[in-house]
Image (tube, rainbow, N blue to C red; front, side, top):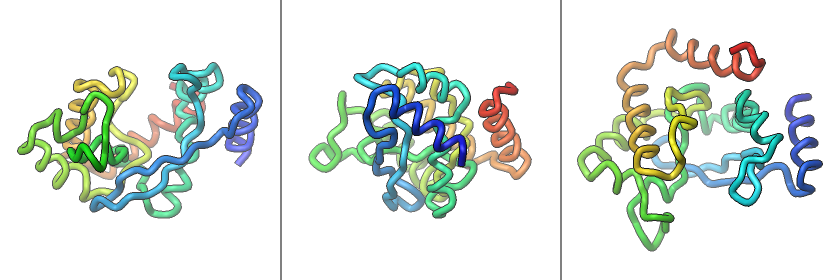
Length: 175
């Protein structure tokens, strides 16, 4: 609880705006839910407090609310914004037209969505390492889909424990 209060206070003091924003994400079986995120960016740039939080994975602490509500699990595919999944230009307009369906093609999209994404609750920890890619690029979307499929095909309790151990090590700056 101290981490949440401290993080919220530091973010608020940095730019005097609300430290939390809400965003609709797509969960298991395509059900939408509200994910709360720390405001770690301003004007498209990561703020110094945001950089500190991201490096230690502290920016994920608010996702614990979603885990406690059973909207997310501890491990699994990271939840996506609706416009990143669905290829419907009127309902889900996406900058640059990038969606998982557009990047993967119809066949791979169907395999990913039906086998690697919707059967699982979205997870707080994932095998996907977003810092390796520029967000919003085709490479980012493909890597994310591949990580989801890999998790679906190879998930084990031991592997999930290892993912969680890595995340908590980053949070406590032990890794």
